[in-house]
Image 1: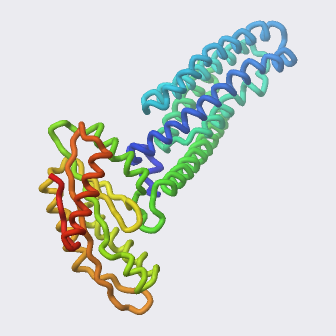
Image 2: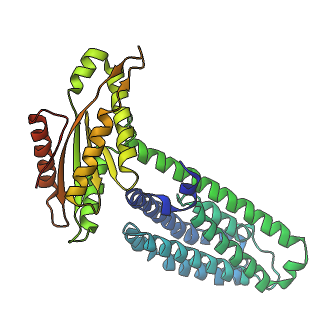
Image 3: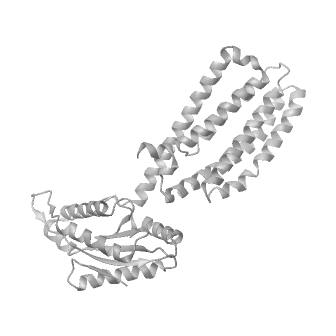
Length: 361
């Protein structure tokens, strides 16, 4: 996992973004539920520890806050739709809770000692936010909002807090809790990314698996322009079973890894490459005409043919060739029919003697 993936979700794939937002939405929903119950339930504690004058105000504040939090529960279902709804929901939550903190502390302006539960509330809030697997940049934004709001509240209620050591203690504690929150969030993000890659990557070649490729293909079809086609290339290694039988499965694995590396070198990061199954690979070239796809498939065929794979056991070399079927699709294409056409073109390439490229026009 690269450092930039910790920093921002701009470096995450669209597929992973949707999965992460879904996880955030579920945890956000449980967090809001916990806060609604906890804030209202704390009325019993206030009744026990507060004098009647403060209790008369704060039990109403707590109930109003719980009611204000309630609309965030249905909003959490909209969080699954896109990132904007997630950000809106998060900052709505922060706004309501910081307002609750402000009103609560303001109620003790008469000099009555503030109960520890109200003093510790900002730190409790930062600890709760740690359950959300946010990138570092998003976590920093939330932490800055909380820290600035808390310090502004302190100054508004008593400007003398800037003239003594209380300010340093407050800032130090807020920074410690903020850094801990961001560290936990980054750890959860790392865990999600690792799980995502394990479930969507082929363990041998580290290419994406067929399931993820189909989602990427559907996404490309949906967002492609009608006048701009995309190209699919389906590859199959020629006589791969013979390689396994004559040289062993270790050599077969070496061939698969070598070919997958060559595919990535030829097509680069703009292409979507997957291990389609067994010795089959598939490549999606967005915004690519059929003729251009044929040329790139031919380039790969020649590159694989010219690069024998060395046997890791006896240093002998094995010649490898492949056959390919090429098709072009557009926004209105039926993906199942398109894949069948690519498979038919590949079968025709095999019928023509292998080690060639055939296009379905």
